Length: 86
Image (cartoon, rainbow, N blue to C red):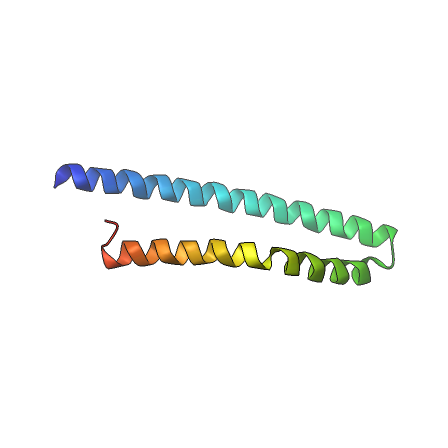
């Protein structure tokens, strides 16, 4: 039982480290996007119109793959929570 607990702690610590790294990366990307959008907005008065148009195009293009990934995470969580995986 102690070995199993040690493995679970190691897996949980690894997961938290990964979440921390992703949170840092998301924060850095968000800041860069904000700086970039404000820079472009200052150079091009049509920026907001173009942004909205492109945002819709990209959202539609990525929608299916994003949903597949979210569904996979949901399945993994279900497996963990039900005890099926661990």
